[in-house]
Image (tube, rainbow, N blue to C red; front, side, top):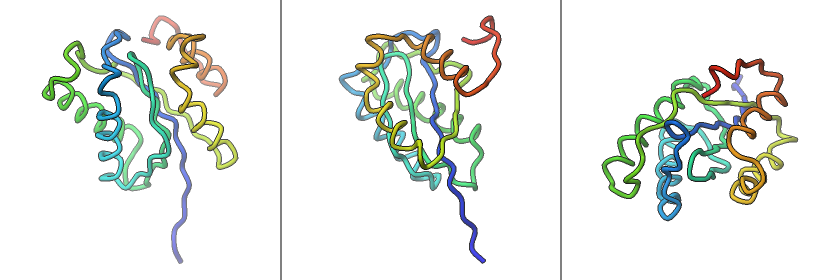
Length: 148
């Protein structure tokens, strides 16, 4: 018998101290780099987007890798690449934590569309407000003192 799975995650993490260090002129190269990492881990990317201080990734998580390991691998590899390539001169690193939220197949297109519209969305809501809202919507308790 074959094994089947469907594990959709929206993964969100920000830059160190939420500084606007993702150079939008080169963000597509960053997203393609992350896509390559996901492919190497047998994960399927559905959408990636962000703004200067954070990114959103909608992907299918392959059962051979844990969520924490995937995020760690993305952060370590992109951090090294961003510092070495010279296209993100202000980038210092990523924040320590991350947010990850699961979604059903019925919610998949809604989340993909939400991620696609990040730049318009963040004209109305900043990263901290968005992150708190997502935690609350997903029933995750948090202490604001330790949020960022």
